[in-house]
Amino acid sequence: MRDVTTLREAVYSLLETYGRLLDDDKLEDWVELFVEKSRYEIISREKREQGLPLSLMLCDSKDMLHDRIMSLREANIYNLHRDCHVIGLFRVDSEDGITVSAPYSLFQSTLEGDSRLFSIGRYHLKLVEMDGKLLIERQTVVVDTAAIPTLLATPI
Amino acid sequence: MRDVTTLREAVYSLLETYGRLLDDDKLEDWVELFVEKSRYEIISREKREQGLPLSLMLCDSKDMLHDRIMSLREANIYNLHRDCHVIGLFRVDSEDGITVSAPYSLFQSTLEGDSRLFSIGRYHLKLVEMDGKLLIERQTVVVDTAAIPTLLATPI
Amino acid sequence: MRDVTTLREAVYSLLETYGRLLDDDKLEDWVELFVEKSRYEIISREKREQGLPLSLMLCDSKDMLHDRIMSLREANIYNLHRDCHVIGLFRVDSEDGITVSAPYSLFQSTLEGDSRLFSIGRYHLKLVEMDGKLLIERQTVVVDTAAIPTLLATPI
Image 1 (cartoon, rainbow over the protein chains, first blue to last red):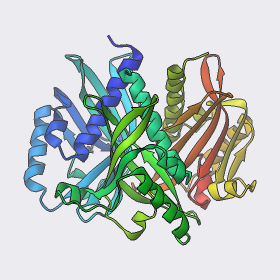
Image 2: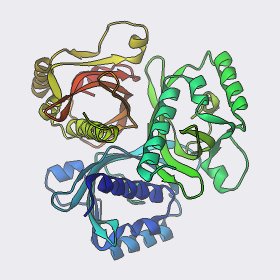
Image 3: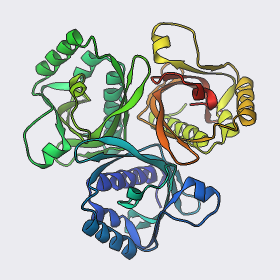
Image 4: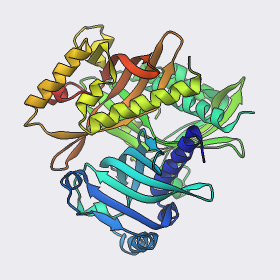
């Protein structure tokens, strides 16, 4: 379908878009990176290693993800912040479908300009190609940083 | 002129050099990444979104950038620190000139070795090709982190 | 031997693997990224610039690195943490052997999920190709962040 270099460039582009849309608060556009029957989950590294099925956030369809974003838009008045995603080196495996793994660092700033490390961890993605474009079928965000209430404010 | 992959590699190389020269305190060499008629500006995300023309730093020629560096060399005795730039995934658009956007995280360490997150935000660059080499014609650094006095110590 | 793009992809893959194995606590696998006669050193930026030969960690063979990992496995009961490496843009020079330089940010999280910036600095690598695979012959980690006792807990 694609050669390795082209696939890597397409994955790079997807991850770049992923981070930029979140940083620009374009959450509705960010949802469009997912296919209809998709699954987005945030889970702590500890829970995952223990095999516990407790998610910090779980949307098992694009519709559910969209509803979530709408709720955020309505509710998220008192917790305004800005994201900055710095995504690290990624790995692509295309032997059995396209899977991607990448560490991320997510910084947040208040509107007053106080910045802090908000979350670190690793993305695990399963991608599919539709109409020549890569989309997310499944994403698990494994966070090293413990869940705090505001963690649920926006996707990671 | 260049194919997409070659252009991406040239942009990668420019951004890598950009961060490394600043981290190595080679500010004079860093200035050479800009063309003569260039513009370098640091602005807060908040001010930018409000359309306010208040810059944290503004040099609208390479000469002015050079003067700035010379001033830093003379004045910057009491504020010694080391930079470490970790630049994230970038986007290149070559439809109307070459524009690049990339998130960055900038850490600083004192000479005693205390490290901290200093600034996060996003670079917006307009590049030109001269003698087969990419140079910066215009750069806007949009910072998420509020301006603090030492912000102006060195370029970001 | 390799063209520039292929070499860059191989270096990318090595650095990605390097960070991931450490983050996944696969230290024994990480050691396998080094050749037998290798040298791994961690040194502070300050000491390096002063030309002082004081290392924070020095292993001058793969065997020694392996012993070190074994000691960590036995001793490291009370200092459990998780690493997250976000490695920045790297530079490859292949004129006189293959040398690589890359800034890194290393975050650590406790088992309770408190994350913090642990160390920033720059990797300097000398690589060799063996059986079509890149391996590390020499690595110097120049850290901007001062040595703290736990610095020696695991490799950076």
